[in-house]
Length: 398
Ligand SMILES: *Cc1c(COP(=O)(O)O)cnc(C)c1O
Image (cartoon, rainbow, N blue to C red; front, side):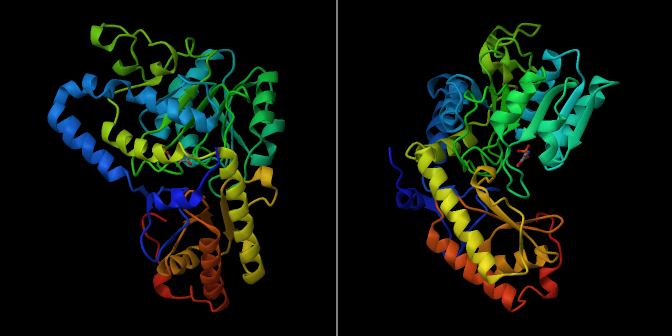
């Protein structure tokens, strides 16, 4: 299979005059999504009503859609299930790991992780009681910090601020050598490049779909449970949809086989329909082509900015193996610079304290977009166009 990125680009609605470099935060609207959701609303919800759970296959959607994501993350079919939000899936993976490794009480993560993952871990430790702790070290120190006190690692593969990418194979192997389990958060990996969960022997993985996978705001998360754990892991948040026989209405919980046990409650059918429209596009993409195109775009952006904007300091690794699909530069006035960019139609985002972050997604961004963005950012920097009071007032979402 060889990917045609001009063709995938044509399958997204991209507003006129906008260069959208934030598909890493909220993916754009697939052109097929509105019709797909409308069909689900009118033909399924409208005409089938409750019978849609059987007739339209709603009940099986979380596993069926999970299988389509499995290809993108190197997971075995039947071991990825959709539902809830990423924060909830992080909690479930952590709780299962701690229960499976009962003599240990330390969750190891890094200071580059996304706060919600850390908050979930802290909250779970508080619930479980004395001795349970979350330990965080610098991202570069994770490998060394894994020792025989660690119950599980909880690492986000690509740092949301810097775009630095961890070595999944090495950290997972080291965790296993020390008797720990490895959880990977793929929030900035799934759809950014090929992930190899099975080949890396990962225990649990979680991720969201509204970023690179374009399911729209509020799209469901996914969780992967390695086949060797699938019938062992006891789900925290045991809900009726993860029961072996939900319609037996048993008074006590008996988990479904495999990853399906991680389902909690009723799945978001309309949002899954939007995700399916996006996955139709993904089905035509070869992941090696995607990675090659992504690295060419991020290299081009780094070279362009460094040649024209000496005041911006690169925060993203130059080394390809250590880079996701985003590039970040630092500047003390990063917030104002990003507002000036947005005013000129170059949409990225700002991450405190000083990160100007842009994502490069070959499905709908090409070299001409990068060049146009570089020209606008260069103009903003060389002429201090960011230095206006209206660009310095912080909005609620940055
Ligand atoms: C985006 C992101 C989240 C967001 O979690 P939600 O529950 O979907 O809001 C969590 N963790 C990481 C690492 C993220 O990048």
